[in-house]
Amino acid sequence: MIVPEDLAKGMLKGYGLTVPQGRVAHTLEEAAAIAAELGGSGVVKAIIPSGGRGKAGGVKVCKTQEQVREAASVLLGNELLGHCVKTVLVEELIPIKQEIYTSVLTNTSLDQIELILSLVGGIEIENTAQKDQGSVLHLAVQPGELIPVHRLVLWLRNHGVELDELNLLADTLAKLHRAAADLDANLLEINPLAVTHDGRLVLLDCKLEVDDNGLSRHPDLNKLYLASLSPRERRAKELGVSYVPLDGDIGVITSGAGLGMATLDLLQQRGLAPANFLDTGGGISEALVKGVLELIMEPPQVRGAVINLYGGINRMLEAAKGILAALTTMEGNRPVVVKVLGNQQEEAWELLEGQPNVYVVRVVQTEDAVDRLVALLN
Ligand code: GDP
Ligand code: MN
Image (cartoon, rainbow, N blue to C red; front, top):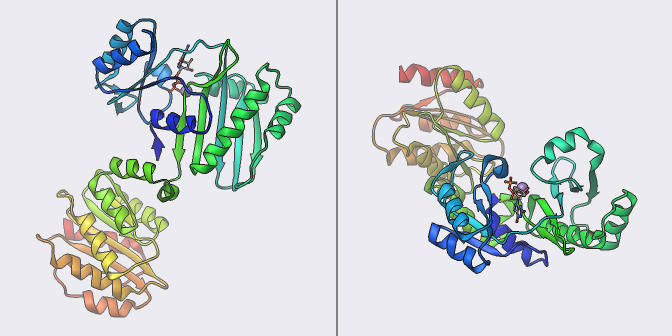
C-alpha cells in the first residue's frame, strides 16, 4: 500500500522528524484558507500515488495566496500521471540550502534493510546516481537491528560526508530507519530532505510504501487500505485471498500464482482475455471455493471460467463441493471448465461430471482445459 503523503508525514512527525506545516485541501477555498494560515505563500502538491510530480507540474511553489488558489485550481479534479487529483497538500514554503536524497529500503531477496543516502538530492536524483555512482552511499542493516546514532555519525564521517548538520543528519537517518521498521515499510523515501539556511533538516517529500501483509498490525493504515479497495477486492481480502480485476471476460481461479500466470498466458495465446485472476493459496475448503467462484463469476461480462487446482494436502473433493455449491446459486448458462488434480481427484471428478455448466478435464496439461473452454465458447 502506498500511504498518501500527508498521512505519511503526519506519522513521521510522531517520530520526532521535522515536516513542513500544512494540510490537505479538497477545494480552492480550503487551499486559499490554508495559505492564509501559513502567511500567504505555500507549496501546493497534488496528492497521487506516484512520484515524478515535480517534473510533471504537480508541485507548485507559490508566493501569494492568489497563486495558491490558482495552483489548486489547475491541479484539483484534473489528471496527473494517470491519476485523478482529488486532494492537494498545501504546505509552508521552505527555503532550501541543499537537497539530500535518503531512503530506507527493504531488500526482501537479501533479507536486509538498506539505508541509502546521496548528498545530491532533488528531482534529477536518478540521473545523478547513474552518472556518479560514488555519490550514493549504502548501509546494510539486519532486520530487527537498531542503529545507534553514533554509528551513523561514524559512517557519514568515514564516507567523507562534510556537512555542518552532520549530527542532525545521523539523528534523522536513525529516526527514519526506526519509523520504516515500525511501519513495515518496503520503502520510505525522502527526496528532498531539505537542509535549511537556519540549520534544520526538513522532510519536504515522503514516499512511504508499506507491506500489505503487515497491515493488520497497523489498524489506522488497514482501515485506509480497505477503504481504497473495490467491493470485490475487499470481499476477497475477507476470504483471505487476493482478487485481481482484469479487462477481459473469462474468470480464472488457480491454486498458486505460478499456475495462475501460466493459465493467464495460455488464455491470451488462444485469444481469450481474463476478466480477473484469483489465487486460492494453500487453504482450500468448500466454503472458500464457493466464495471465490461466486466472486469471479460476478462481473456481468464474464462468459465462462477456468478453475485450475492442484491438491497435495488440499482435498479436491472439498473444492468440488464448493464448485457445485456456487454454481447452484448462479443464473445463466456459462461454462466452467474444471481441472482439479491430486488428492481425491477421482472423487472430485465423480461429483462434478454431468453437472450443468461444469466441464471436467482429467489431464495434467492446462492447454487442454483452455482449449475446451475455447471450444465451448465458440
Ligand atoms: P516529486 O517530484 O513527486 O518527488 O515531488 P516533491 O515533493 O519532491 O517536489 C519536487 C520538487 O519541488 C522538490 O525536489 C523541490 O525542489 C521542490 N519543492 C517541494 N517542496 C518545496 C518547498 O517547500 N520549498 C521549495 N523551495 N521547493 C520545494
Ligand atoms: Mn520527491
